[in-house]
Length: 242
Image: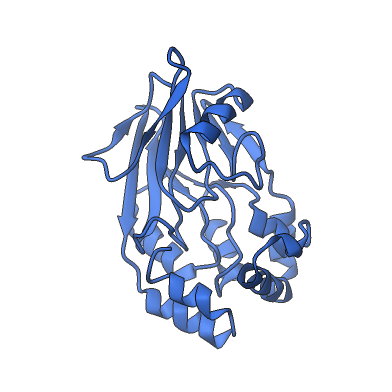
């Protein structure tokens, strides 16, 4: 069995389609949240993932699009993009987003958009925050998104600390024996200095994880954003991967 792991699509349909075309054959799709927000095609992204056997989580931008979060907690550009998204979502898209869980378990894997401790908002950006979060789930592996940065935090229980593993790796990663928190990075708005869409392939039977990157035509997404009057900074940052 192979699972396509995606996160933080952010209504970037061009990036999502490129990932779907690039990925090897898969049996399920797991989305770790933030299908919408920032980008120009929220309804289309929601419809596209429903074409596959899938599970999906609610992220902070998904909640913002439903007015479940105070938009004053977002920066100006994110707030403006979310206001536009609110006016654009179809009733079917709203219903889909509204029923998404904030966290769930799938066998040996715990899934949350942001963190096990705070599933919608907390950023796991460093080993100290990651270490604290191991107390909030019981499975061997936790999958998160939200930071838009592909990374692995590996728990060293004897030393009571985390080790940070950063791609690129020379090949697929074997999961275990240590517990891990893994972030596949962002499909629609990477922030690690690499503008290519980031995703992962998981083989749970053989406990293999593979980080993957793929170049997509950023200029198409940018032109769609301009046509919709979305903030210029959000348009420009796509090509910088920041």
